[in-house]
Length: 481
Image 1 (cartoon, helix red, strand yellow):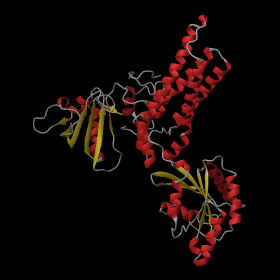
Image 2: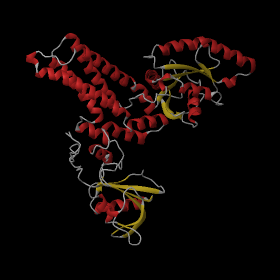
Image 3: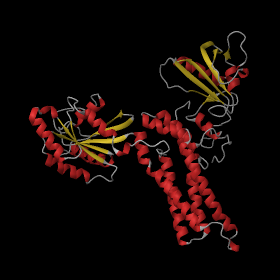
Image 4: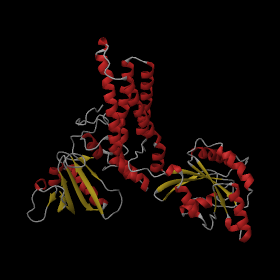
């Protein structure tokens, strides 16, 4: 188990030795104008220097100023590979905290492969997934929460996820966690100090003050865990279930929102027998739209399976769009609304009635029918998915739901499941601490609960970690980062 960041042998994977110099292509695979190859380790500069020559009477790479791009020729034993740009970063002033060399070459896959083979023959080895960032963590360049944020930043697909990852990578979450841990350590120290003097009946910690502090810590922990739902929505997208009876235009609506023919559209009822899912970004937020099987009584076994899945998706969705035909009876739709609302678990789920096919009505009949729908439902939107009419109002309604409220500048949002679980365990330990103080339990039992809370809090930033945690986190990174 890794217990100190200066330990260089990785026991997560015995084949990885952090004393090696590693190399990897850090740009995505595929054809591009340029690519970047990165080396890190004690021999990074010497290995690169054995392959690189500068124009004229260029000095060796290790004598050049750091953090500056230099033009050079890179060759192997077969001859010139490419004209490259090279930059050097000396330890500890680099991403990994080690000597780092970055080589920018042309984007040819053949050139990248030649450079990698040349570096390996010169003494480097291929980096494992996430090994550059893992070395940064081990050298104290970032804590574990910040390291995870690097992966989240790379994977961010919308403005909200990008903002969350950037905030976490800059240490806002870590600072909050470290403050909590410091308060817990101070509290535990007072309790354990009394244990050392238990025979002398000395009280170092006022129980009322400890209760107040524990209550404040619990409030903070519950606030952080309570933010996870919003953080998860911002990071992974809010699930939106499009439901309704067959042939009301659910698939047409999905296609109109996505601006592509994602779902099959047919006048034959029951065409959609399973759910279809796709994402779209609106005003910086990602939505996961789920087109579901039509709700109706059916004897078809396959269709019934699809309808059962529809009800499951209703329970999982944060927003439900109940689509109906404008010629439907509003009172009948109200019955369906009541049924759906009985399935919703909490106030964080929202139902919006979407009345489709307004293009079928014109003139006074259209106005009269529209008034009837608005009189029946507080939240109703009239659209024509086929003609793409009034879809903008629907999009505006989506981004105004409470789950997507913009966090304040100083508000901490948790979006990582590992962090959520650790905070939840810590909160439970603090609840036991409060109960123990209330019931007058012995100091050793109270101290044990506090130590558990400290342990779980420390897991978030990496003060306390295990091989399994590190292996799971960094194995999900792309190679080269």
